[in-house]
Length: 137
Image (cartoon, rainbow, N blue to C red; front, side):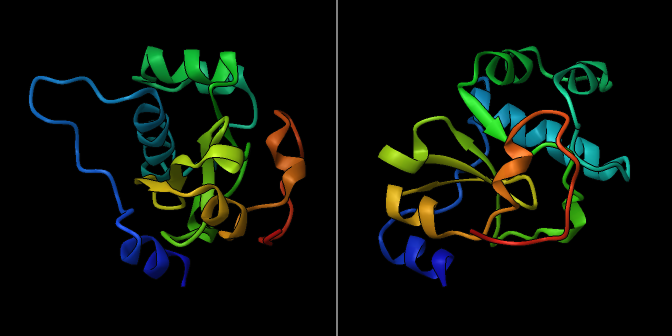
């Protein structure tokens, strides 16, 4: 329903970065999470785990370090599909912005849509938190 709302409001999945342009930090974090999934691993549980991932984009690591992009640490990405948020730009819940979906793609949502979309438990926003069963806020 949220994605239908996003499409209706003109929001949608961001296109791949244009040739010759570098992906944004949030897109790079999405790529980092897709890489985890392709390796059959959950999202990293800590920043240290993220830094150790092969080919981890430096801007993704910096965005996670600075808090510019927040993710739900340690989630099993196979439990979350394209209709769940597993990360987002820091200000997205208040101002709207880029959201990383469970399949690692990035989409733009309004603040209201960010607050309403299904997400893992908020406890997983803290690095090192123990993953729990899939849930939404």
